[in-house]
Length: 132
Image (cartoon, rainbow, N blue to C red; front, side, top):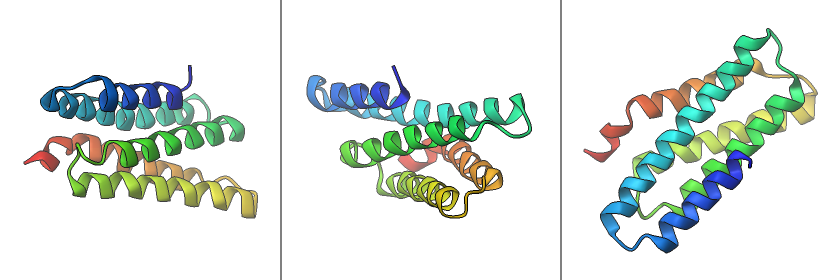
């Protein structure tokens, strides 16, 4: 099961099957944090495994997390603060720019992926501040 499937199923569970608003909010927070940290960790795994990860592996990972962040920002928008949603949407745009650049100039932008992964980690580390 891919990360997209996991996130999609969890989003559906939160929106449709949990009737308690507080439980929906807590489940949303957990899903977002897990997805942010998962993105960072998965990228770090690729980066540390070799100096140049296999392009198709990173490309697929970026596409999966882009879809996951899109699902979160659209379907959980009622449960998350606007500032946090903007940050997540920015990750979607950052990933989109990386994927577009890869296709257009046929080069791998590892530094750009690092910046994006670091941004995800920063959001994760400051996550609770969005709910103050």
